[in-house]
Length: 497
Image 1 (cartoon, rainbow, N blue to C red):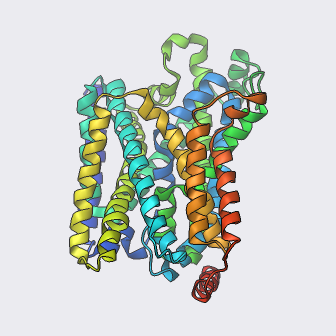
Image 2 (image 1 turned 180 degrees about the vertical axis):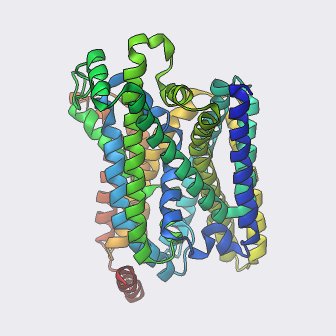
Image 3 (image 1 turned 90 degrees about the horizontal axis):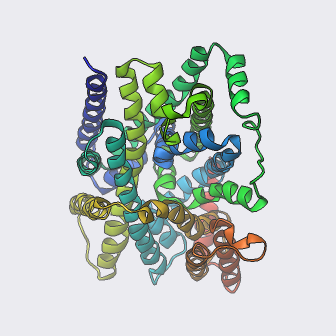
């Protein structure tokens, strides 16, 4: 058999496994809470790897190794910031959010939690946050479909549109039928695939080169400054901007919803240990892949025209074509895990937070089965819109990923933290802070330069700080009701149980 045949077999096995998990989850989804939050019954392993896989996307296997391969370890500051941010997210947010969402009227989405936590009678928080999620995540899903199409185009020479449709169709089917349970367990498998592939490549690569000493020698011969964490073009603002990516974790709905679904606050702590362990292996594996790539290819750069393909190229060099095929599937897994998570969160924003809230305001009650049906329809509709946007890909869609990360981080991040740790946060303070964070990101992200290059600072920093300041200032003008204080105390107690 040819290499392409082996790789096709690996892809087919992967696709069948994802669809099988979707079918299994369908049989275990009985109501709306099941569909959206797996009835809060995720074990810490699934929650941790699901959060990691849905977070990292193709950046972990292509973007990060490519940047480190091309420019050296100086490009690793973003990875450091993300690792610190993920650790803080598990420690500060996971246990308390798991407890508080149950105390706050059994909230199953981020917007519903903010609404219930702050007793927002005007529904400003639910509507504004639901709309933010709906708009931004539709673009996010679209960018993932673009990545999927380009993956098939570059790896198999397949037509971009056919590749995009394959990725979109498989992901939509298992997300639509299996809901949160399917998304979480497919993410779990995808997370295992990603970290296994990222560990195997550098380990086998070092053996291929004859040991660590030969690896270090080869890399140093290519570039003696490769190991430096601070290069001639590195700036303080650049490093701060890279590290600031970690702030975004507190406000990413598709990540923190895993904390809401874990079985108990105590298991959220265990999930944090597992999640950070997974992330360290993954990030170090990505760095190791880049370093091996430098040793193998930098003496003859014509063998690797695109730095972002270093993981793919090494996989084909070092492993049997069938194993290399599963490594290609790991890249696809990274892309699909993010798409599925974002699809489900966007569907929940549309059905639970916008449509459902509107009907409850009118006094209408919708059955759980009908909400599940509408949510499945929403998954399909959102995917269709995203696919139309991705049909003729443009850089603006892909560039929006970094912009949307900042938008979510600056608008939701401080609000989530304050709602969990400051009893005096008011609904109007949270609303004003969210709007401030979102507006600052929009303005700052479209300006550059300024005194000392200040506007080159990643927009999440001023947006995050602006949100905190405004939310604090507005909330200081009022005191929480006795009921809100009692719920706050109950959540704190439950998070420590």
